[in-house]
Image 1: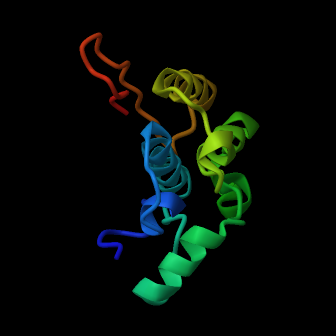
Image 2: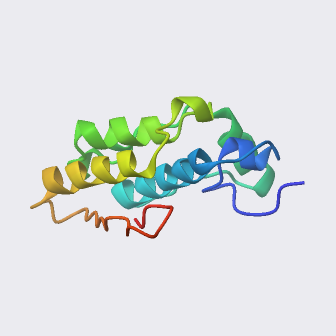
Length: 130
């Protein structure tokens, strides 16, 4: 049985399937959505509704949810890659995600409504620190 927050957990985590670094990458995508839009990607009225929405997918892209934030296409693209239902379709390395976040931050400089901070992974850290 799943115990946790379906707002940020990958579908495979919720369904108690095998998890990997791509499960964490899904969570990074969910957090990216909230940073860009100011609202959570998963917004069910109850825990069970949130779980259903998390496993189903098909969420509104960030730029459509918050067009006033000036969200660039590359942000939508990275978010979509990170939150694929199939873990095999997500980026397989955190460095790929960190590089995408840097590109987003560079493109969004000057947009006061949204801020994206990126920290490069340390050499002795297996996961990117974002």
